[in-house]
Length: 264
Image (cartoon, rainbow, N blue to C red; front, side, top):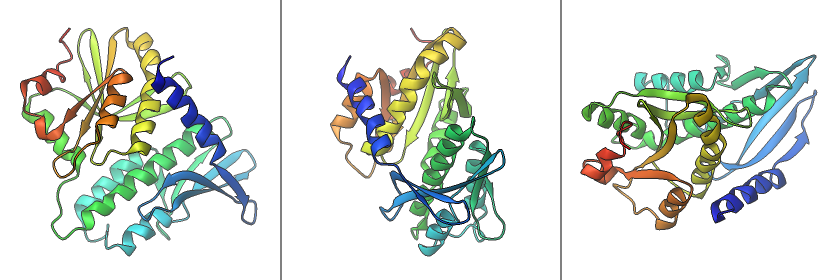
């Protein structure tokens, strides 16, 4: 077992030990997760069970937090499109009354639904970066433009099922005859989202290779233009068998080679 396998096992233990459940009222429970929102508060998910259905909700907190820092969806068509795409990717509905994020499932689908809702909350929360006076395009869109410039044929918002049965979203997939590249983008990379990405990758790699009968490689494209990237994060990616492109070096020949799904 290499060190990153031990680290991921400890991460799973950490999740189990740092999730707490409290009864709220009328059959609703709050699940406090160890993941942080834009204010560095723990993300809470609310759930209740009615007959054979389980309902999960963020109680409207995600959109409410964004509104509090000036991120409006009603005044920005682009933000609204991004929000709708995220909700579609994770099969999440939004209430017209209080902007509550909602997903309906059953006991068998609970794990996937909770994972989807939590992923959607974190991805939508990242949009607080667009509250700056000079709004830049979302980093994922910059990566999409980069792939288009390189004339790469890709599938956006690629969904694949891992060995645990959970489905995971990747920003892009590039398919060759004998190799497949699964890409995630990181506008900001930190211990939390890196470990989550490596967990997703660890769960999906073998299952995807068996299904596609191709060599599967993982690729992280990281925004390093306004910040220095800690080398330990890059070492962790390499140790786990994934690769990376620093966006400031995207036009170097070695970066372009990493996007070639037909290379050996």
